[in-house]
Length: 536
Image (cartoon, rainbow, N blue to C red; front, side):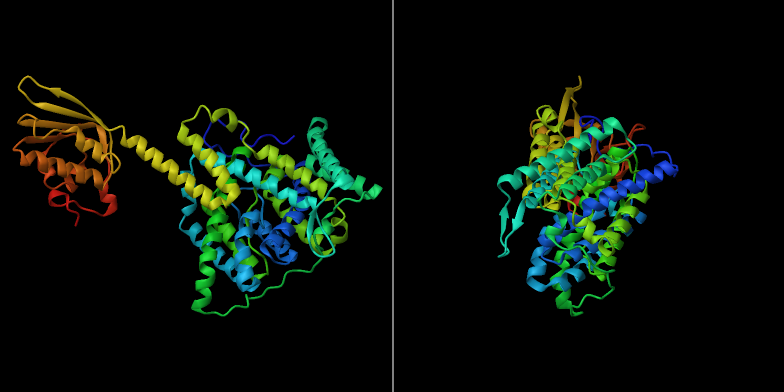
């Protein structure tokens, strides 16, 4: 059975750096596993690519060509061996609007621009910022995507009538299809208990396909979706006007495509890394995804990104090298060119069963047990990201989750600012500041002090605090001005050298000490604080 993707969900963070797996020796046994895993993935890619092409409103071959090209390029040049990319539903649901409004040629142009944007993201090494995605967001992403994969399979339980209308399968055909789905899942569960030398998903597909074809069982098959027969993709520059008006049309879509594609790919990169215990290059993955989308746009493909379902099938089948992805791409193209009539006979029930097992293995089941133990904000983020992923798209879900997590963190730190107040025998009041001083805590910081009632000499000690940004410097300047207005002697201790440089009025009140901290602050913003905190 496919194991849960987060077997130790309450343990290490999903983006923790793990040791690189030793180089995999390409023995005959390893090559066999990689090729069989690639065959399994290729079989699973066919109905997915066709279904997503229908969602986007384009010809099925547009989805199949995208799956072949993107899978090949990212398998060779991607950031992590064993990860599978292709045409995805997350992008298809956004593409449909562009196709319906302007046509498929505009889609091809938008995919090319999407790839260029992703190449720029890789060149600028923006992929490293994926590490800022918190653990609760990662859990919500995994759970939401598992639900999306699960719901997507129900489309295969529909048939198209003579008038082109879709209806749910019912009666005996439905029972037969459900039975075949259950048989597929049972085979996937049992095969690893008997042998690990053959991918369980592939064994299940072969068993169920042999049974259906041999007994001529009347259930929906791949060919019922659409014919997958075709030739090699042709190179062609998208037939759109090369004008600024065209760019205005496609650029917003390209930015959305690029964002969704990179977020899903980089999160999948880390998820596969957790599964295989390996590290991968985020920026390298951005470059590979960008190159793949530029090429697929020029060869009539719909674009795509990493596919968590197929990636999990691949690694669960034992694949650990780039060979499996390359094999999947080559076999997929072979299906299109030479074996379409055979592949079209595979029952959809077998592929649905495989994807259901992917759902079981992908969903972070332990999130149900930890959700009551984590902070309420984190629990809310897990649930919210899951729901948004299902209801809208991944990019919005992840961005919303990161923003809420960041605001919660800022609020938590803002409430930590406080002071221990002592008074010496000679009447000097000492404020020992505790907690970080930044934009979120400056209001609480200023409320600590009482310039009107404080004695003639006051010492503010920052030894257990840290000045983080320009807002903090502004607050110190404001505090100094208040005390000076009341004729109080104010001394500031244990501030960093940057504070000495950037503070103006308050800088005259700072006391040098051998144990002053050394850290950088607002200088990084290129802002210098002038008299009374006025920035210039």
